[in-house]
Length: 338
Image 1 (cartoon, helix red, strand yellow):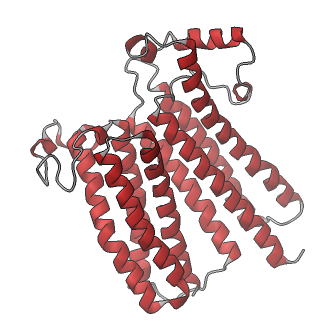
Image 2: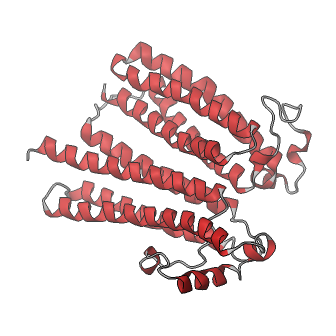
Image 3: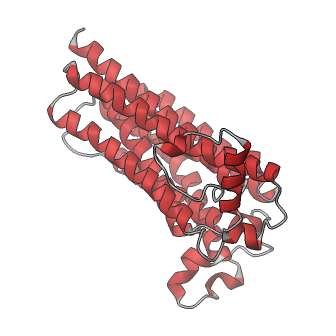
């Protein structure tokens, strides 16, 4: 196999891992929206991959769940059937995370032994494996926050867990694009490239703000658009003391911030795409898809808000954020290889 074919094989493997991260994120979103994330109260990376195999196993797991604050304070009337429903969602989420580790590590070793990964690239790609492990550990750290007193996971840990997933997705996708379509070296960054860099950062910040919205259930408040219960800026936006805490715990502030980032993106992404259209014909497909998907994503967000966060729509909106993130990265890569 020649060098180009070797690079393609590694690139498509990284894209497959990206697809699995995307799928795991979708399952994780549904797990959160169905309040299933606190159903498994232990973290057993290897043994935990096996589901309950007998009625006695189910009763043992249910008994452990019955000791948690979520059961005592919220789900005290839950039956075994109800527990099994939330258990399977959390188990599927954890299993998909484990499968990512297998799908990543086994081909990585094979590529390494065959000489398709060498030197700095091999070390860089192994770093993705470490990052994936940290992301899984952060998931358990997040779950632990809801097993103490308040049956609600920390919005900070939720944002970190989701942010690490997006970071892993972005790094693997960018590396795969670089191997499949090598970039040109530009003598100096242009305005379009600087704008593209900032858009990557801004979309990532939007994702983190969305995690805060989900973490404090801010989507269940101010279910009007474009105003927030009649106000562009709700009067209670700075009612929490100290001031900085409003940006993380105040439903009005957290949802307002998420909306404002969306408004900024609605202005910057079309401008970015317009500049690409005029300057880089080779990157026009990426620019068009990015602009179209922005419209879809904003529409999903508005619908999720107005309909008070239905599970299917909210999960689609979260998945759409990763699609938008991927398209921003693709557009940035396309203008660099032109």
